Length: 151
Image 1: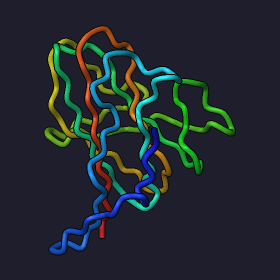
Image 2 (image 1 turned 45 degrees about the vertical axis):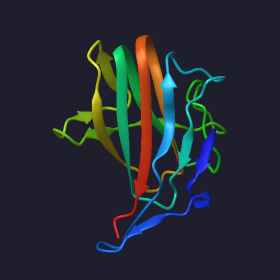
Image 3 (image 1 turned 60 degrees about the horizontal axis):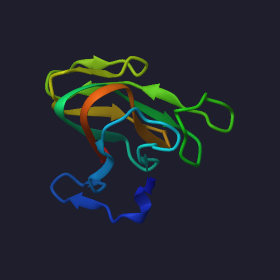
Image 4 (image 1 turned 180 degrees about the vertical axis):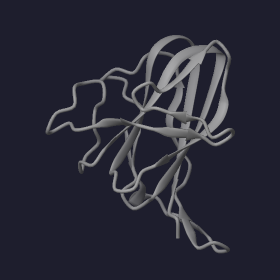
């Protein structure tokens, strides 16, 4: 699944003039490592500067969550090698509760203690963003995303 945010009516915070996308489910109750046949949803974020991800896990999750992005016009498949027609790279995210930076290639490693956190990514000039689950052994994973401008 892929969400083109232009298909959704953005809402504006009239106090700040910032534009927000709706909150979209990218990973909704996943209990396995991502594969090409079970890709999490991607969001088109071309017209936005930032995206915030809400990450929730239950059942003493053990897994790694990574965020990937592309500048291509169509969504990428990060379960396969990055190529000229499937160009993608892992991106860094920042934990909004304590400012910890998570390197895109390492991801967010969850080790038996459920998380309920928010992470932000600077997505300037990126087209599509897609979370991925790897090294899964237990638990249930949810990731929601919302994009915004800085204006």
